[in-house]
Image (cartoon, rainbow, N blue to C red):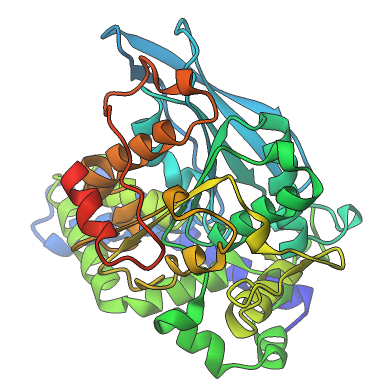
Length: 443
């Protein structure tokens, strides 16, 4: 399938469906149909509106849409997104809060590069902005990166993280969510040997596959059931003529989206049927719950082929991070070299993507780190999304994470006058079954 024509065929199907939706919406919105008693007219126009919006969103990068934030003084402060560091495959962004004294607590959110944009963490950013200076990794869509920029695999991703950490300094607190958790751990270990003074103050790993073999899910089962040759043959394509990255080998976002939807096809079908009915009745707003969710969910990005294939092979199949055998630029990255960076893991009891056990495995690898600098939290009744952006994050996990950052800051003054959740983080030994209960009590 590694042909530009195949990629262009998928784009042609998308554009055709977008056009069909727009045509249906326009045609059945003519005034002449206004007095028609047949409800099929309104239903068809509603179908067209929902279809056009859905297929148009698939190639649009969502905006951060964070206009302002309420701070300690009770006032709204404007927020501006600033590019702190620019690189070919991803930028480091800073959320600048105007007319607010800088916060001592500085947080780097490492966003996943697994098919969606970094804006998937919008609610996470909003929840942290009142109390922190927030930075985030903003990965670029591979279809927009010219072939002349070269390759980008998981080793390059790891080195990008080390560059960002060096730039932000040793007082930064790193929070890696889902896919980048094992690579953030590897980046910290890399710095522990190459540039110890650039290591972050803390590392929080949320729902990441440190050891995919610790607890099976559909994701790990898929990785085990297919060969690398099959993946390269059937899911890798070349970017078509429409984009700047024409000719680049990628794992297309549209193909990833098809897999996402297939996993819960009935749920998505019901959601779209209900939205069509709501539009036909005039009860659907532009920013209702359906549109807010699917505007983000349907906006997908391509990953470079080498990044996707190396992730499957080295993280999931060979479990190089879990076995502490990961290499960057020919040099083994030894996780046991991390000796003074406090590490906390967070898992959701109902996470069906990175099941409980996969992320906490990081603490067993940190043999050089004192138990007093390790902590883990298992959030009951929380799924994958909930542990970083849902109710569980806002009510339970976020306060615990902020306490952990303050308790393990490199500068004691960092925890002074900046946190609405004072106290000491619950730090427990690796693998301790009491860790989750201790964290819940401190919440």
